[in-house]
Image (tube, rainbow over all chains, first blue to last red; front, side, top):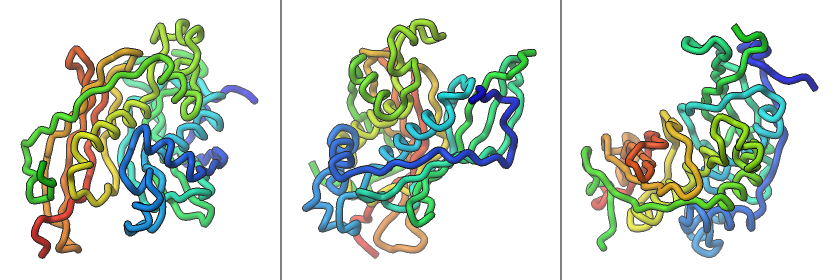
Length: 150
Length: 150
């Protein structure tokens, strides 16, 4: 598979990045380390919340997206890091066993103003569940090397 | 310590949330699970990048913030979840042993338009390193219960 450069990205493209699911143990282990709110780490306490059972930390959903993004795109791209992201929204609780499907939609590309060897892409990043509902979305800014530099 | 409600939050308040640091092992373990780019997981490969050594995944920095936010504020607050966040920026690489200090600045509060029992707070969330430089910032929207409901 040939390497992906900034020049290869175009608004409107969609990259499917594969899927992953989280077990209850995965969710609790992550919660105990990074987000120990009762509904992420304690099945009995979670049963008494509006969620009714343990749900994943929203940050873990973001981390699962990142893993699928690395495996499905960044590992074969000439990426040069990300200054950040905008408009992150958690839209629906993620439960153990939910099939989390990640994709990236290219919104816009533009050359860097200051550096001739790279360009920026604005990417709409989506995690959807098995029923097709979006559970998390955000818009990331990612830098990619140009194929022909300056 | 008395429980924190929406009524207790005011624009201009700053909550210091404590600090934590990541070992190289912590950074590599997180990277192997969620962000296996060479500069997060492979010290030899990282030495050949512009970073010169292993740096933490930006998502791990966000997760460390979340842990400090839960321990330092949410665990004693009547919080009701977060619909999302805006303007997340990764400003400086995080290296093993960096002292990561988290704080929250209250930007704005307003009552919920649709539900009388709660209000929203816009919080500027910051992770700074031992030299005081901000390494990550974002603006979160968080729902809190009102002390006197309706």
